[in-house]
Length: 293
Image (cartoon, rainbow, N blue to C red; front, side, top):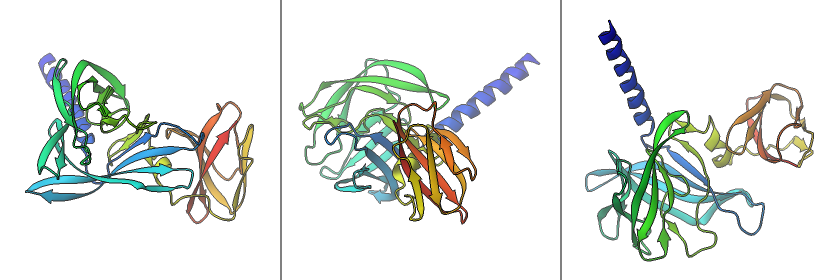
């Protein structure tokens, strides 16, 4: 009886591990969003977004075309000056980039690397074509999205000086501060806080977290007025009939929701930036950024 129970527990554990490993797979539609480090003008929200758009085949190898761009709340649009495409291949525990200048596969991540291992990493930029060496200083297991997740703490030990990579890599997801090694000759360097990851099976830190940042087609429609904004005690709206509403934090956590009330009490909510979603009677959705003073 005990042996049978042990076998059942083992099978359940293997299934959970397999499901989580599958959940970490990268496929078309996978997205990573990082908060861009702030600089002048202060108060403008900018985000680094990586989006896996489609597959392509090169030399019989299948790659994801991952598009990198910046979204800015200043003009609520994509900064086209920063558009880049990368060819990414996930091979077991390794993530490889295709280097078109050399026609070669270059290492970006090795999620199975152990403490003390040194890795030669390509920065993904053909202009510099620079490689750096990193060392895995230590390993840990952390709670990520409710699941124990392996973490590698890394440090740059060699390179051309322009690129570096420090901090923590999450197994199956990538670096917490920026997906690629950071070009340090600009101020600020790219990347910042890891806001969300989404691949159709996992949405970290919550449902629609990436949508709050990435979807720019759901701005507040004409005919709906949000006031006061900035607010202190409450938010109200007038205009088109609203069926449901939801208030989210900037990291994608739903804080409040309701129906047809016309206002949201904001007392007890810390100062910061929030997102209000309104679902109208015809099921159209609108979005507004709310500032709580």
